[in-house]
Length: 348
Ligand SMILES: Nc1nc2c(ncn2[C@@H]2O[C@H](COP(=O)(O)OP(=O)(O)OP(=O)(O)O)[C@@H](O)[C@H]2O)c(=O)[nH]1
Image 1 (cartoon, rainbow, N blue to C red):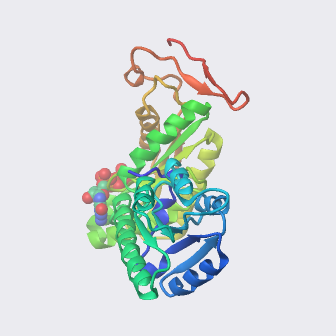
Image 2: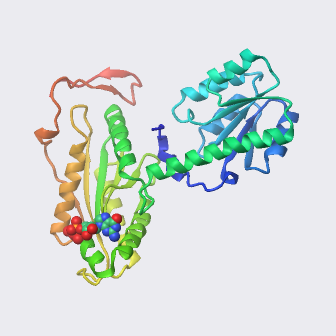
Image 3: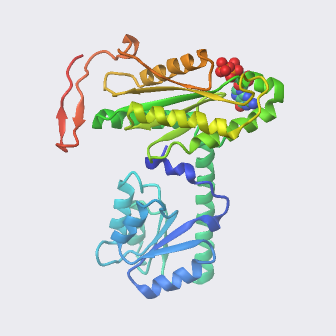
């Protein structure tokens, strides 16, 4: 699985190659204008005349889907730029095609060995470059569609359990490292079984989608993740979030579903509602992440027991033994102040 920093891969809902973006990197402005004009009929074209600018575009919120890169450039060669790109987790999956007047076999082989997916020798006839780039864009499009569906739940289109598990593990590790609190909100639609029975499964699916899309917007920070993890169960992961903040968000989520005013004749309020369990803890290297989930799940259970349409915050005071791992528990922590790695934990 690619590194999903900021998880913006979940936004890649593209249907046509015209929605893709090519970045052309070339220090020759005449070449830039020529190839930009030729390829502008295919998709959005952006350009950079040096590799530093290109790199900043690649780590931006709107990275290119394909890079066409010259080889001979003053600050850094195209090969060096490509190598750097491939070494960074946020940019390593951006495909690079070299576009160069260097025609020797060893140059082409170096291009491929640094991670390029193709090597086109300049000057190249207009018809040929358009066809070749179109082929690459179609492959990129298919890959993006596959990625999109492999990370999304088929009914609600929000993140699925697979990505939830990946992100949970990754963020748990980050919170251990930076000694940050981690909050988890577990949400469940109230009386959903009777909703299905009364209104039918098709209506049930529609409601799942409506509720999920209403709740997804509460994962606002780049490392937050909202996911559907089961039938009518959802989770909002809130790394580096304190208990108070998480409780406020959970309360707003409950209100957001109330505001949808979805009729539910079998519900006490006559409208569809949800319940939420909130848990917050400081992740530690010898505690399994399932512990946080378990706390939130227990809190959710209490919210349901109290009649639903409300939040309950976990009041756990100790970590159950079943979530404490055995053996060596020393931790390496990189403290913000020190900026260096330090052993701080010992046997608990
Ligand atoms: N329409 C639809 N229903 C689903 C889907 N996945 C699970 N369900 C239904 O969700 C219902 C969950 O029922 P329960 O776990 O008993 O929960 P509940 O009725 O909401 O009860 P409380 O949570 O205690 O309020 C079951 O009837 C499932 O069939 C789905 O993808 N689509």
